[in-house]
Image (cartoon, rainbow, N blue to C red; front, side, top):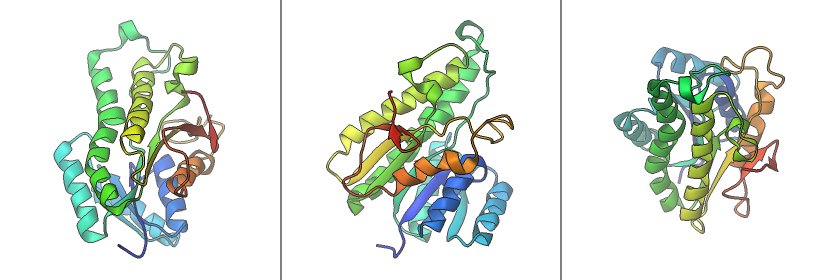
Length: 235
């Protein structure tokens, strides 16, 4: 087993993913970020290394099964078996006032492809390594917009994709119960990123903190739950 735990952060070249990677590296994990664009990935790695982290980056398209498989195989070959996975890569291609009847099927497909199926692909490749390690932490970056508890109108494709991601969290957590793998979802809140915009009230540091906490849970930590600011929230 490698001297440092190996963490994967998808979409780690910017925003919340970049900050999660920074905080995990600061916590003495070896972090591998994945990003579709090699130039942006390399730039992000240099930025993270400059902050003192043990970090690497590899090209990854979570929408492509072959890319996901190749990425995870490279991580294991170059750095060691991954024991932490943060499914952060996501898209929000619709307007906040979009409606179900007006949203093209192409938008639904694009959103689900990344926000749900991207996470499914990553879990499918990483969980076998975690099973062999008898240790794993999977964190799915969800959203309050995906809460059925207070589901409302607007951004229908995004809402449905995050609700589905939460269902994936519950299903996978039940499947791996007792194996040493803990699976949770978290909502970062409205964060000042390219996606969230400048008017968002929360910093990336605040948005990332709970994901990092969940990535470092002890063996008796929670699984199959939904969190914001380290507190359970309704599904």
